[in-house]
Image 1 (cartoon, rainbow, N blue to C red):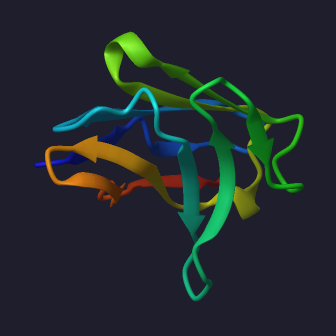
Image 2 (cartoon, rainbow, N blue to C red; image 1 turned 45 degrees about the vertical axis):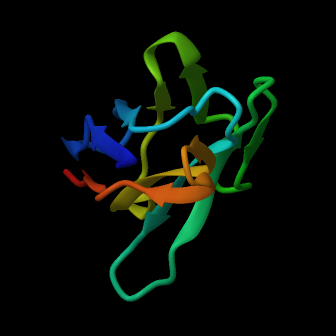
Length: 120
């Protein structure tokens, strides 16, 4: 069974930093593009950042220069370093694996989400 488990969320003051982690299990992830998405109350889920198996990254304009996505394939873990946090970054952050290889072929998987709240 494919599982993605996020951690590292919490309450932080504006201008602060957090590092999210996403631990993956139950499949082969090193070939899969991975991503972080977020959903604020009353809004649709939106892309934050993605990283390919080769390490190429893509960011939403709203987080460019502040957030950094990275991956450790040996640990099946994806990270999101978030700096200079703003109130508008408050959301539930979700990890996504786009093409997880299992015995049944490729599948898409989501984590359960971790809350990030930026407030003074």
